[in-house]
Image 1 (cartoon, helix red, strand yellow):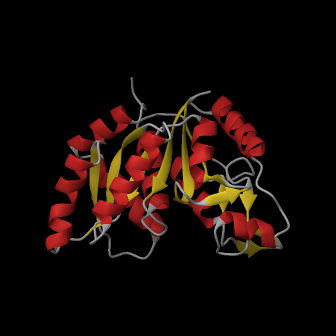
Image 2: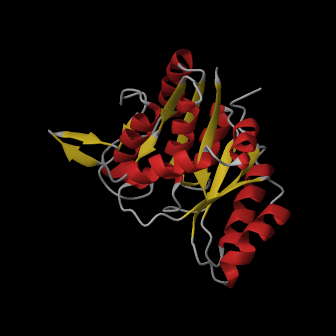
Length: 240
C-alpha cells in the first residue's frame, strides 16, 4: 500500500479535520497525488435523502479529489461514539470494508491522509477501538492537541497509549493556538515537546473565521512559508 498518515486527537473537537485537510492541501500544492479518507463519521447531515460527511467533503475539497464512498465508507446520523451510532442505525462497523476502501485509495494516490474519530480509545465495534483500526491499516499517527489547560496530560496519555500499542507517533501538532496565550498555553508546547517522546511538528495559530474552508486555505498558505513545514512533511513520510 502507499504511504500515508493517520490523524488522531487527544479528544473530540481539537481540530483533526482542519489539520488533516490543511496537510492534504499542502501536499497537493507540492505536487503530491494525495488521497483522503474519513473511515467513520458520526453526526452526518442528510441531503436529498442521503447521509453526507461534511468532514470528508472538506478533506476531499482540500485534496481536490471527488467525494466518494471510499473516502467516507461509514456514515451515521447520530452524533455519538461510532459504536453507539452504528448500533442505532442497525449496522456494524467492519474493519475489512474500511481496509478494502483504503487499499483502493492507495491504488489511486501516492499518499493518503486518514482522519479518525475522536481519539485512539474511541470504540468502533465489538470491543475494537480507533487504535485497533490504526494498527489494521499499519499507519503512523499525528496527534492533534489543543493548547488549553490539561492538554499536556491528555497529549502524554495519548502518545503513551499509542506507543504501548506499537503505534508509531510521527509527531504532535498543537492546533488553534491563541494570539495571546495564558500561562498554561505558554508552557504547553515546551512540555509536550520535551515529555511526550514525539516530535512537536507545529503550533498552528487560531483563526477567528467560522468558515472552515477559509481557515484551511489561510493555514496552508501560512504554513507554506514556515520552515517547520518541511520537517512535518519529512516526518510523516511525504518526502523521502
